[in-house]
Image 1 (tube, helix red, strand yellow):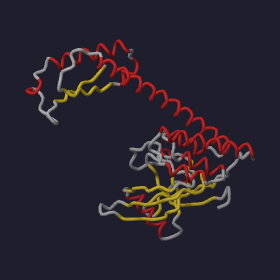
Image 2 (spheres, rainbow, N blue to C red):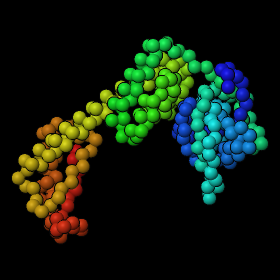
Image 3 (cartoon, one colour):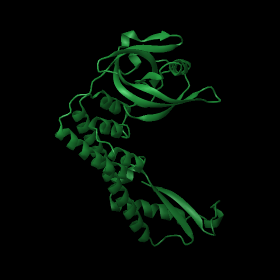
Length: 288
């Protein structure tokens, strides 16, 4: 499709996901209108407009309930499930802007007019350099975010096109739907790469702080327990730190550990513990 081309296609409203160009993703579809739209495109060119709902719990969104920018999705595979729902594998293609006033019902499904959006903002060597830096930042990002498979990085490292690199990384960021939608709406590839880099930088910083706090609380808990003279013999004690422990100092944690161990020491031991593992009687308590 050429940039600016006007197309009319069925619409598949999406819940809790933004599909970027070059992104291949399975979708589970249960709404009758959406299933009808998929069946219609499977009989023709297998292309459908993928656009995200503003509110995921809206059952039948109208034009105001949909974001304006989406992608042209190509149906790679469709499987009907026993419960009547459909599992479909789609690949995101060109960005499009739908014309909300043209959204209409057609043969039991939604269809809309839209125009294909151009990609802009490639600044040559500067953009290519930023793309490489963004890939390196993504390498650091996935070391903290264990939900992203290492194979994703390997695939991105094989790509030279800055626009494709930006969209591949954006699709794997653990950010909220409005933030992902903002990235989809950024046609300027250099600006998009800068925003992606910033989002990863902020997330890495937050995860580093969280890790330091978690390690500090663990270290203080171990030290506080080690210093306790009243530790009950033959008892496994599991301390669960509440979120408020992150703001506590060592003295406050030590005080809470002391109170918890005193409570456990006053218990009857074997008579009051219903679970026995290997002859040892566990105790569990929360700190702060």
